[in-house]
Length: 117
Image (cartoon, rainbow, N blue to C red; front, side, top):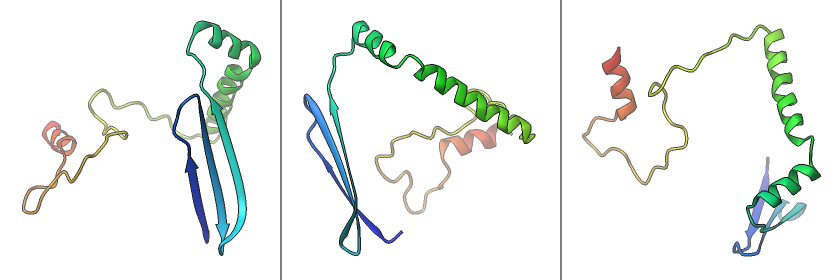
């Protein structure tokens, strides 16, 4: 899309405000604001949230199973987990280049896979 997005965040404290503005050709298109209030992480607050939204967990579980049924009816094959150490972590934080000029560019994961095969 030919849109420009502007984000604003306040410094987290007792509350956090996040605002986004969408602009098209410099003209405002959409504006959204989210304000979050900090709350103590305690058993009392967890119970209060569960009582205020009792069906939220059931709704999520039902949604997951509904999607599984849809995949099953389409005959999508089940792919099992390959086992520990046989997949590359997706959430690794990279602090810089993992290689330099003239050095081999294979990762430790790729080297382990080659050694095991």
